[in-house]
Image 1 (cartoon, rainbow over the protein chains, first blue to last red):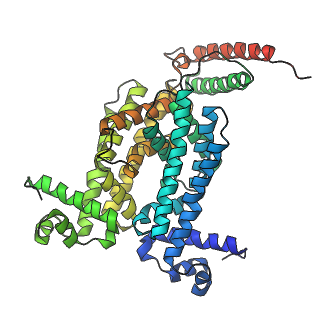
Image 2 (cartoon, rainbow over the protein chains, first blue to last red):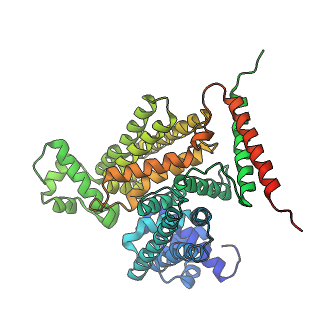
Image 3 (tube, one colour):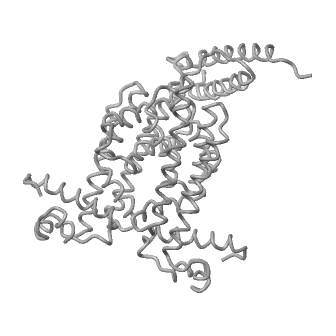
Length: 231
Length: 231
């Protein structure tokens, strides 16, 4: 265990525990093995967590409750622009999953074994996140910015887009977490947005026009690469 | 167990086993309990499966290998329209997940416990599905029908959209599987498609891309002239 403050040490333990629970299942990994993975004594782990149940509860707090807090903050600070609100929700949720992918999978896998209080907290948090996504989508539809979609199925589906990296993300991969989150946020927004009219107005018109230009340039490069050279 | 043919009985056993593995974990559920859930003797279950490992292997064959076969069929029968090809891939994968949601979650949760051969078959099948999605996206981008996106991250994300129902779908819910699959397929297609006006067609791709660039530059000039100068 690297020398850090108590919070840092707790996080190291949670991290190591999450990895072991993924490898061996919650039932298959012991406090002893968690200690060994960190190169410390069992006592050092027991200092922070009485048992594996406490570790699971802490994992729920670390991931699901944080997801709830973050999505509620975006919902309350909501800009008037439904696109930007949805983009912020998706981006932030994806970043959370990317930085806690093992923890997230452990919670999913051990849902049935979660201690009562943690189980209810987890259910409540998931419902709150779903609700924040659903409202953002409904508002966008009402404002005429989004297509008329079933807000609930769409909310579930966009949460799926954000959450799926837990099942494939490798931190050592070619793309940074930020690049992945941006790509997913754009896919999510495009999935619901109504085709933009080619009327550009106001100050956002300039940046919108620039975005279109960039897209056209990307496309042009691609076309030129594909076109066989003459001669 | 309802009286049906051997295939039907096997499917009933797999279904009951999947539900129990979700509730109690793979380690926590016994062959005895699987038999009890079906109201038959343990011998009746052993007639079809020697042990829990064989049940897990059969679950992999039922879900992941079928996903692979189905997505490869769409890929090989591919229509020329990248939108319709992607729509078919997403629709079909979502329908498979909806009809096997418990089985799918069990495979995810017990990945580490899968017998060797089943583990490799599962990994190969997932890779093949990813590959079929990636190619469909790349082809759409090359054809100028899709936005310029990272095909691999996008493929993972669309697979996430299809797979997420495993985590929330209730067969007794208000929407039919067909309605859910259609909604998700439309979200997936919209997430990548270029607005109709901006799609490039035919061999004149390069000149069309240039025309769009000119159009966007005109827009941009207009915007800048219209924007009030600071000061």
